[in-house]
Amino acid sequence: MTTKSIFITGAASGIGRAVAHYFGERGWFVGLADINDAGMEETAAGMQQGQFSIHHLDVTDRAQWKQAIAAFGERTGGRMDVLFNNAGIGIGGPLQEMSDEDIDKTIAINFTGVIDGTRAAFEMLRDTPDSCVLNTSSAAGIYGAAGLVVYSGTKFAVRALTEGLDIEFRPYGIRVRDLMPSFIETPILDGPLTGGNSSVRDMIAEAGLEITPVSEVAEAAWQAVHGEKIHTTVGKTAKRLAFAARWTPGRLRKSLGMARTVED
Image 1: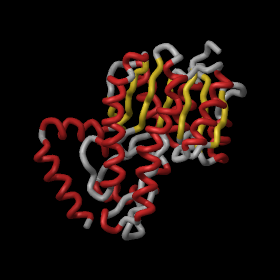
Image 2: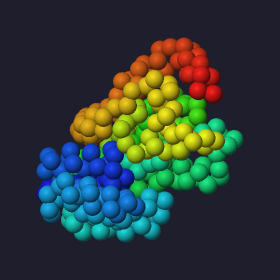
Image 3: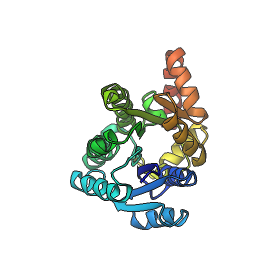
């Protein structure tokens, strides 16, 4: 196959679906991977026949990773131009009130799954000229987010992984990039906050922050894959946060503390 290809986790909705459609519209072959089979069918319904493959994948299962990558390679002739590690969940709340299960699940999906996917796809990426790993980090990976510390910690970890692997994979011709979106209009915003009935979306509304359309992330993903920047911020909140974290960290810390006090 000479057509370029991208393998996307979390492809059943949100950012994954938007990126699948964006790349598909530009002639790429798209591997759709998720645990939500019905959602993947909905994503595929917006694409041309023969332009995609569907792979049931729990990113916390290493055996499923190997099977999905192998099946994708059968469709692309062993080609993978981009691995998009996008699957993630958003569970928040005070750390001391979070369950062991929620903590372990967040880390397993948001971070360990990225590592396992990158390892599983390494040989295919290495054998594809000028390939790229694109990871979904977050604005919560720019500065720690109170009330979302475990989620934020995983996104910091993805950021560090991206930076290190971009150097480590350079001899193999593999570039590594990440997206750092602010709050995007996706189902992850409806994730629960431990210790109450509110959601991440409710917390955003209380803080007076904007929610960015998912279409902006799809365009940013295209630019990240074809550009030289390691980190690509998406949305006004992410850009403001990146600026403040670099130039006025003391003021940023104070404002975040005040926002948290208001919420409490």
